[in-house]
Image 1 (cartoon, helix red, strand yellow):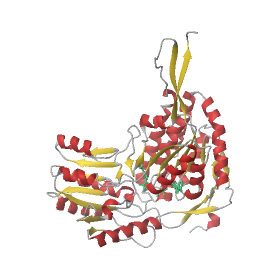
Image 2 (tube, protein in one colour; image 1 turned 45 degrees about the vertical axis):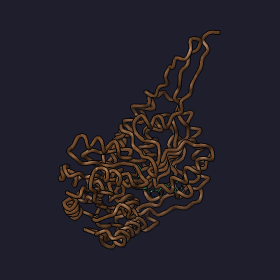
Image 3 (cartoon, helix red, strand yellow; image 1 turned 60 degrees about the vertical axis):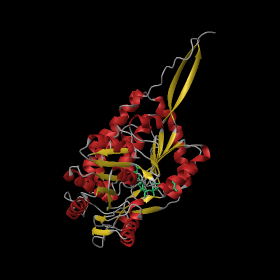
Image 4 (tube, helix red, strand yellow; image 1 turned 135 degrees about the vertical axis):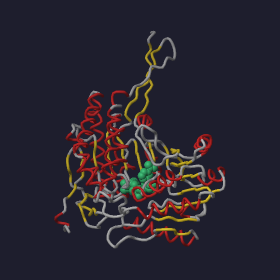
Amino acid sequence: METETDLRRHDLLIDGKRLPPGTGEYSVDINPATEEPIALVAQGSVADVDTAVHAARAALKVWNALRAAERGRILTRLAGLMRANLDELAVLESLDAGKPISAVMRQDIPAAIDTLEYYAGWCDKINGQVVPVRSDALTYTLREPVGVVAAIVPWNFPLMIGMWKIAPALACGCTLIVKPAEITPLTALRIGELALEAGLPPGVLNIVTGKGRVVGDALVAHPGVDKVTFTGSPSVGRGILQGAASNFKRVTLELGGKSANLIFPDANLDNAVRAAASGIFFNTGQVCSAGSRILAHRDVYDEVVERLAARAKSIKVGDPAARETSMGPLISAAQMKTVLGYVETGRAEGASLVTGGARVGERGFFVEPTVFANVGHEMRISQEEIFGPVASVIRFNDEADAVRMANGTLYSLAAGVWSADIGRVHRVARDLRAGTVWINTYGYTDVRLPWGGSGDSGFGREHGDVAIENFTEPKSVWLAIDQ
Ligand code: NAD
């Protein structure tokens, strides 16, 4: 085991330079699979945030002085460098977040690269419009960058979700300060270095690591920040919205979820249960759109529970570095405590624990894939986001009952519906309150399709052309042509 003095120190990345934090403090970053320290990470201060915001403001001019096509080429070069360093990025993400290496190589990093390449293509296609108003004037719109963006990122998909924010912001001519989650900062720091290598001017992409309560709060309060894009928990999101009111920052919030997966009796049960299992157990359930509520019709309820439990038992939980591992640990001891606490809550509320529910081993934050049956819609395990590998299977009687329960939480991020009836799937998709509905599939996201929710799941959308609108301000121009 490495001692703290052997560990690499990761400084802040501000204005193209690695800078030690003003406080001189570093936190110990640990591997959630082994609980061993893997790095020392700078604890940014309020003064560091101020330096980064000034660097980002100054860089706005430089970044926007480049031709749009040149900005696109730099982003494409960064994507190329990510591809060339895919193994290193995958290992860093796997060590830092406890994600199975196979999933990171197949999903997280390729999705981040795809996002960057998609927005690289947007750089020279962000157009205003000529809008005819009257004969004595030429009237048109410009789309200008919103300015300096603070991107606050969670730990469950550090690089992929980070890139969902970095790529469109850069494409629109914005500059950024990225604050990764304090427990998963390593890939963001590496991307900051690769971006400089790709030719991104210093100050365009700054990475300030540290505590949410310090760095996050300072970014949200800073008058030099024009927009905050946040993915994380509803409680932090609420604080960000309040803080952003200080100078009327634009805000996009991607918050939690308690997504329902509705299984009707005419569904292909093999496919439905396979997808329902990966819908809740993928990334150890630490997914905002995890299908944590499986709503099964009473005619297939017992079969769904039985098959889901069999799948849960067959999942290979263990070392994220092993290729055959399909489920790694939870991110932290705190998260493990929360998840095991919900298992106790479920039992106390009278749900039946069919499988799982316990810690695996004594080292690393591993918890068994867990299935609760006979879950009541009002129970806490059915209403609250657990953010762990815990499936609640709820019985429904008919379509109206299923839709009522699916819509019956504070969240509305995503939902799934399984049925062979073409009328039903479209009807239910229409009636579900969710930013994304999957029909006879579950869990896909793609940068070309809008992503986000409403209610406690936040507001605004990421991805696609919606993100271009998020990071630009329209300007209307009137030119008198008749004197
Ligand atoms: P979190 O809200 O605790 O932290 C998210 C980020 O906010 C971290 O970088 C953290 O350091 C920072 N932060 C914490 N306090 C802050 C403050 N006072 N001011 C500013 N920033 C602050 O969330 P988490 O535990 O990292 O992530 C889990 C949550 O994120 C879950 O609720 C999950 O559903 C949600 N999530 C949503 C999506 C989505 O797309 N909707 C995706 C992933 C995760």
